[in-house]
Length: 177
Ligand SMILES: Cc1cc2nc3c(=O)[nH]c(=O)nc-3n(C[C@H](O)[C@H](O)[C@H](O)COP(=O)(O)O)c2cc1C
Image 1 (spheres, helix red, strand yellow):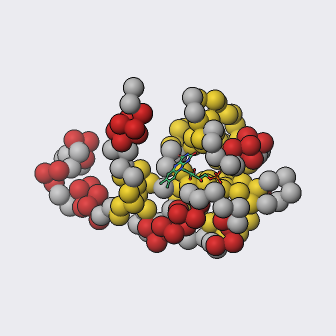
Image 2: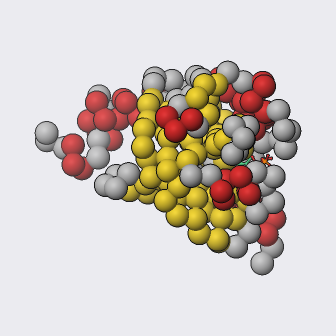
């Protein structure tokens, strides 16, 4: 199979952008940009993210009992770029604070989740980190999005209009209600 073409096809699925963060045993904060994030379960509260076997921080996340997921806002493109690099001083370039269990949380994120590592699953050239949500917050804003290898900004106003104003395009379960 042509993996370059497969990568392009996978990239047709528009995603948000997150930064996954944790601390090494000595307290050094580590993190990487990821768009492989997905919610998994509400009860129990579970989410997942995939980390490449080639990530510098793989060993740190494999050992980490806790990690955070920071969903980026459109103004955080540079944050995404910093965490997509392999620099060792990424956290020197962004505002952040310690959250529950001492995990790093990025300031200005659209949503932030503190997770306990529930399970790790080796999956081809990535590992799936399954996390149990221990704490979270979120705020208003526009998401940073990613489509076919590029950052894009979504027009999030449309969704609100469909559900609330436009009768013709309302989903069936709203009809007549
Ligand atoms: C938009 C975007 C999404 C990415 N998603 C992932 C991902 O889901 N998993 C992953 O391992 N790397 C992903 N990467 C690549 C990592 O961010 C990159 O390899 C980074 O250098 C890893 O950091 P580290 O080597 O310091 O651990 C993504 C990069 C970008 C720009």
